[in-house]
Amino acid sequence: MYLQLYNLIAQNKDLFRFFYSILIVFICLIIVLKTNRLFQISSHQGIRYFRNAFFFYGLAFMIRYFLAVPTYFSSMKIVFEFFMIMGGFFLFYSLLWKRFEISKEISSLFNSKIFIFYVLALIIVVLDYLWQTYDFMFFSQIVLFGFASIISYKNYKKDEKKHKFLKLYFIIMVLNFIAWTLNFIFASFLGWRLRWVANIYVINVVVFLIFLYGVIKLTKKPGVS
Image: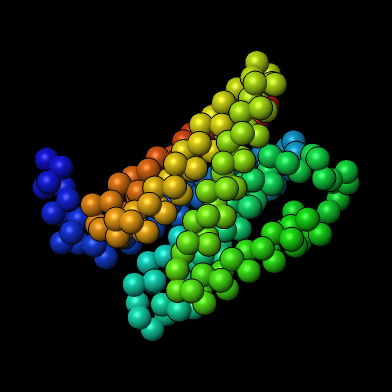
């Protein structure tokens, strides 16, 4: 059964990549719409940064399919990587914003703290472009989600009875850490073989579906629609 599925994917790589990207974009769109609605009701700043993360992830996967087109490869690779890194930064900052912000009136896309992330993302993208690699992105995201896993676990243990979503948040941060680590291992040591790439795609879809599940569950609470 697995071999048949693998052969089917191998024979339709472009189509598989296209539908994979469309699925992720669709999930991101739902998450952005639902979290934006939740923010309008609650005015919780963390939700805005959480929403922004999936806005950038959605943009990244919108252009992912075009990476296979030679004419657009260089520019699309840069943009894709930048959006992916910023998605990770926004997700990470959604855990930390309370420690750095007092006012709720600042923009969640353009403020002094987020500007630092934009600069870091640009530096990482430029380094990867110059060395023709994804290693700087991999390292940045592995470290990022390593810290995010620790922080989300502490948050969960602190308020596990009050906010059950924190357990889901912790699980997703760990899965993200695992996914980025596997991406690095497969790219650097095992090569981008279709068999490994397909497994990574499955993990990525699972991570995004868990996020979607958590958001839907959260928005179904009494008083939230």
